[in-house]
Length: 381
Image 1 (cartoon, rainbow, N blue to C red):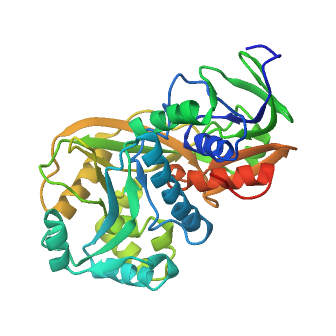
Image 2: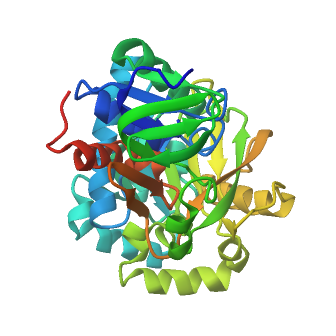
């Protein structure tokens, strides 16, 4: 690439889900888009997750609205880009009366639209594998969907290139961003606007705009389990999720649940463990996760933390977890006081970060917001 490369309307730095979302939003407007990424293929948080597009439980307000919009875009794009939607919906298995109270309080909010509380008998009829003896109820949401991230993100990028004309510059690092240009290790890309979507890279571009917000990094541990011989028919969560996901945890009823969990599952809370279980096309289960925070988290997975995750699995399903087939860690940008950071460090430049583990769930809506901010007007198809 040389400095005489054709200009584009939007240059996107970062090919994770937020960067791809910005590229999609711009391409839908008929704009010329280039995406710059230092890796040969997706390798970060966008593929080291559940592929679980979560609406129910997202933080009330803007994040919940973004999740609803992003879920709709995922459904549209999945059909066009041949990305399989493996299952839909969510069951939050409540094993304590305090958890049931949180679910009931949630249903009283606008976020509970379309959701309902199932009795143990209704749960067993719909999902027999969740009929553990101490199950009191299950919050059911129809809103979620699940894709296989390792396949979905590469397919999304390939579809953007083949069908939407997005140009990808792989194994190319962005060295400097200025109004109208991105200097890279392969030359200069000239652009009408630039969206910088660095994931959890806090130091390469605009560190002076990131540092004041106290953004750090979160490490999570995840596992793939062998096929248990049943089909879930939806994602599964538990009491621990009701105390962690902001859409539930911010409700006054959650205080009593947190107190009981602190008394009964202090180790899980100390390691940020909660339960999400989703199923892949081959029947295997993706299960997690934990949360540890540091500017540079260590890369090592702890066996005792995995054991805490599997302990919660066994409690919810009423049987030991299947054999572990795979383990991995992931990291994402994290901030204590915000879910998203959008900055305008220069005219025509936006810095965009999701600072909680909700990139797949909210990224498409966020991309639309950023492109509308840069180019004006609403989204087009």
